[in-house]
Length: 478
Image (cartoon, rainbow, N blue to C red):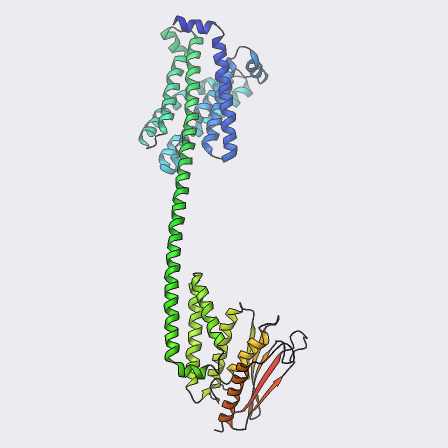
C-alpha cells in the first residue's frame, strides 16, 4: 500500500491516466478504420466502446490537453455518467456481434441485445431532459435504474457466454470480470469500506479498463487470424477440388476419345460392309460432306458439348438412313425428297454456323405426297449450290421452290453464289452427280422433262447467283 500511495502522490498517477486515455483513443481510431475498411460490425461496436470509455473518463484529467478538451466541450459529471451508460451498452452489442450470436442462436442474440438498445435509448432521452431542464436529478434517478438493469443483463449475458461453444468467449469473460471487479473498487461505498482514497480507486479501475480493452483488441486480432486461417483452408480445398476436377476432365476426355475411336471404327466397318450401296450413294452425295460432318461431331465431343454432338449426330444419321433407303428404291415421293433436302440443309447450316438462309416454297395446290419422282434426283443440285455457289460468297441464301405450271411442275434450286460465269467451277464429281440425276430423270420420265441452268439470278455483282430448274410432268410416264 505504501508503494501504491507513492505512485498516486507522484506524477505516475497522472501519467497513467493520460496513458489510458491516449490508448483508448488510439484503439478507437484503429478499429474504426478497420470497420470502414471491411464493414464488419464487431469493429464498429468496439471502436464505439473505446470512444465512449475515453469520453467518460476524460473529465478526470486535471490539466493538459485532455483537460482543455473536456472544458471546451463542457464535459461534466453528467456527461461522464451518460458516456458510462453508453460504453456499458456497447459492451453487450460488441460481444453479441463478435461471437456471431445472430447466426448461432437467434434467441440468445435477442436476449443479449434488445434490452441494451432500450437502455441506450433511455439514456439518451434522460440525458437530453437533464441538459434541457438543467436538473441532473432526472438522470441521477435513471442512473440507479440503469445500474439495476445492467447488472441483471450482465448476469444473463454471462450465462449465455458460458453456454455457447466458442473459444474466443474467454477474452470477453476475462475482460468483463476484470472490469467488473476493478469498477467495484472504484465505487465510493466500496472505497469507504476498504478505506482507500478515490485516486486509489480510480487508479485500480483505470488499470482494469485498459487491460479489458487490450483483451478485446486481442480478441479481434485472434478472430481475424482464425478467419484468415479458414480462408486459406477454403482456398486450399478449392485448389484441391480444381485438381480433382482437372483429373476427372482428362479422364472423361480420354474415355470420349476411346469412344470416338470406337464409333469411327464402327462407322468404318459399316462403310466396308455396305460398299456396294455406298458406291451408288457417292454419286448422290459428296463424301467430303460425310467426313466433314463426322469431324464436326468429333470436335463437339472433344469439347464436351454433348447435346450439340448428339443433335448433330442424330440429324446426320437420319439423313444417311434416308439416303441409303432411297438409293435402293425405284421411286420416291416429292415430299420425301424435300424432307431429305431440308435435313441436308440443316446439317450443312450447322457447319456454316447458321449463316445459310434457306426457304422452301411450295404451291398450296401441289400434293407433294402423291407426286412420284426418281430417288435423290435433287440432292446433287443442292450440293452444287452450297459447295460451288454460296460457300465462298458473303451472301448465303438458297431458295427451293415447287410451282405448278399447267400439267407440269417446275422445281427450282436457286443460290446467291458467284454464278456459273464467275468463280464457280464445276468439277468432275459435280458433273458426274448431275449426269446421274439427268439419267435418272430420263429413265423415269423419258423425254418428258427439261433441265435448265440460269445465271445471274440476282442483280448483285458479287453474288449474281445460279438457279437450276427441273421441269417434270405431274404424272409419271414410265
